[in-house]
Length: 128
Image (cartoon, rainbow, N blue to C red; front, side):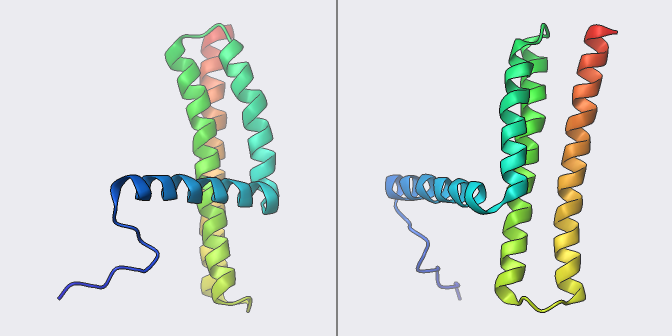
């Protein structure tokens, strides 16, 4: 027996792709509007990406420097989604809700540490 599809899932090719792009842009707008950490990280991304592109390093190193910054934004969006789902279920304090939010936050921390380490290694190898 197959599970019924969600009424929110479209099945056609081009319409599905266009809808997915629309939903993704809505997600980015929501993150910008309501997620302070995302705004901070996006502003940092903008300036750091410009710096990465201006650095006298290889194209691959530029890609890696910008890529780890994108990874931070991706993980922050996932963390925000986890927090939204937890809050949607209940605003009541609960150990499992705390765990979910803390685990999402830990994922963001690890992504930030990876970004910092990557930048440190590239800059250290280039300038020292």
